[in-house]
Image 1 (tube, rainbow, N blue to C red):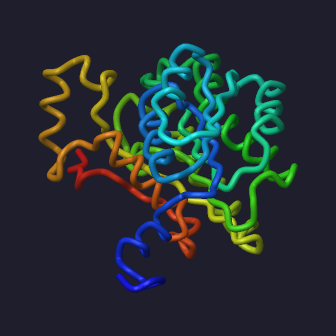
Image 2 (cartoon, one colour):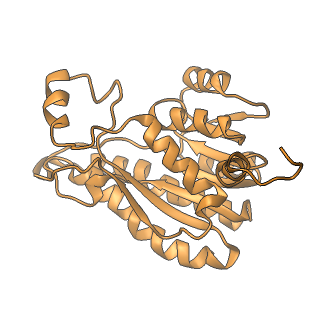
Length: 254
């Protein structure tokens, strides 16, 4: 190979690689956050992973390729601890908000306590953490912010009102934020996964097998979400902002 020759491998590594970038991931102790952390570290990123379970977060940290990764233990619904996370993580080139709870309940049975908990975890925490990072100039110019919403925010499904509402709120706040940060070339996007195969979603195997029939391309895997995050954090998506990226496998809505 000729020195300095531009090859497909070099282009891919440059566009989709994250070498030299520092990324903050919340909810990294399990599920989508953990899988995303593994992918981003493999792509060369230095990670700051955040969660509230010390043991699980340590396991994630040990599984990461590369060096220089750090972990922060925090309950993000505690606003004082949330602000400390922003200070402790320092400068970052990207943020992936994976922390969240399901919040299932028929609307006629929703309590104020339940609704407040769901909104605090799924909406207020990621928005306020982003707010503190921006206020302290801790997200670099040209950076990327990813909110983890859900296909439930785009479609009506029985029994997920509180959850769907909290995830739809993320879409609502994402668009103005994308416009506000465009002058700094900071991109803001929202991923909307449908059902993803995890230990949690497969606890009731008969239910899972039945609902899987509604997905022409199959139910999503954690790796699918991680790869989408990799794209939105990389320079390959430098002109992508303010988008709602549905990952539903061609779901046939009831």
